[in-house]
Amino acid sequence: MIRVLIIVLLCLSEVLSAQTTNDKIEEMLQKHVVLDQFSGTILLAKDGEVLYAKAFGDANKSYGIKNNLDTKFNTASMGKMFTGVSIMQLHEKGLLNIHNPVVSYLKDFPLGNEITIYHLLSHTSGVGRYMRHPDYRSNRHQYRTIDDLLPIIYDQKLEFTTPGERFSYSNSGMVLLGAVIEHITGQSYAEYITKNILEPTQMHNTAMRFGDEVVSNRATGYLKSISGKHLNNNFLSSTPYPDGGILSTVGDMLKFDQSLYSSSLINETSKKEMFKALKVTYGLAFQVENRQDNLVVGHSGGMPGFSSYFSRYLKDKYTIIVLSNYDMIARNIAHYIEDILYDEDYQLPKERLRFFIYKNKETITSLDHFDAIAQYITKHKYSLKHPQRLNMIAYEFVRENDLEFAIQLFKLNAHLFPNEANMYDSLGEAYEKNKQYDLALKNYEKAVALAKKNDHRLLSSFQSTLERFKKKLNKDL
Image 1 (cartoon, rainbow, N blue to C red):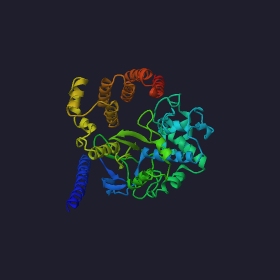
Image 2: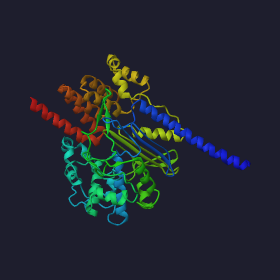
Image 3: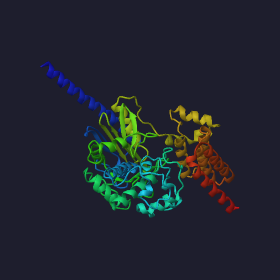
Image 4: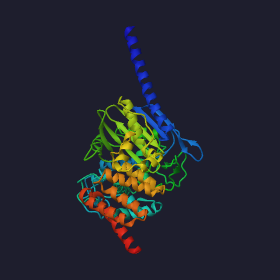
């Protein structure tokens, strides 16, 4: 009798613990919703069994359509995992060798014969980022296939010339892997992943679809301006490619998660290789970290209007999936859930720094030196430790045509991070928009000088900006 009572109490304890965890997750998410910081779907599972799953916010604000658990979201860079799995499938079948040069499979590949498939998978190839190419920026919607992208990928200079030398995240590298898949199989990338990943795992709500296609239950992505206005991302949507843009649901991503615990997609040898962190917290097409005494593998994704996060805790068998039609939020939500699961200390979310700065612009403008501004912001418990954080906010004021205040923020950032070349490139851009050309030139030149000294990855980009601006000055003169 006592033994039975103990068992009942233990079971009750587990139930209450689960309820407490779910209550904490619910409280955290509702706080995000009240602050209008999250819209999307959440799924938490253990051993494939769903512990928590819920939808929040609007799939379409214009028509008042709510998100639900079957809503399809653009998963952005999470799609890189499908590309990696596809390549390893072909490797297992002997149709390619990941240690062979890319030129073995793409005969017109012009970037050298030392870059291998392995380098592309691990983002250590030196291949750049096609989204930065001026032709892509000017009219991204004209690119519909992988073959459309290859010329601009081949046109870009390598970010470094010794493959394997360092990690540099490359969307172009993943597109090249898609081209390899198409060349070897004779199928389109979409056809290949449908037949070899989506159908075997019964991921029936996952597909590659263009932004102009009609897709049932697809979420519209939203950006929120610094002044609080919501804009849909239709004008910023891009073509789905092997580097990202696949539509999926939390339920389908759980099926993908569970398939990786078996050998239905790839074998144990392939998984061991893919889930091994290399130079940074990245393996082969999977992000790899050690957290909470677990090897945590998965991938995040982000683009204007969408963010996503897929995280697998290999020892404890937890799965966290967050899909959102708001940008730059999914990772934060997933980390909150992790903190709750593992009884870590956490603070409920507060108003974001960008809105705090917008609301307190007059006070910030009245302060007479940069240290005073920094102290005012940090006094309200906002961090300024990452250089890109304030930079992104300053660009939002540029988009609001408040150039004077944007310049003040860019100057503050340069004051806080005087050795970061990008701070001066951004400041130069703001001065150029404000037609303060002498100051623009001075800051563009400083960006190039600092990049030569501290950041060779961005040197060619800053040099191109400086050359363009000098030509503009000569033309105006």
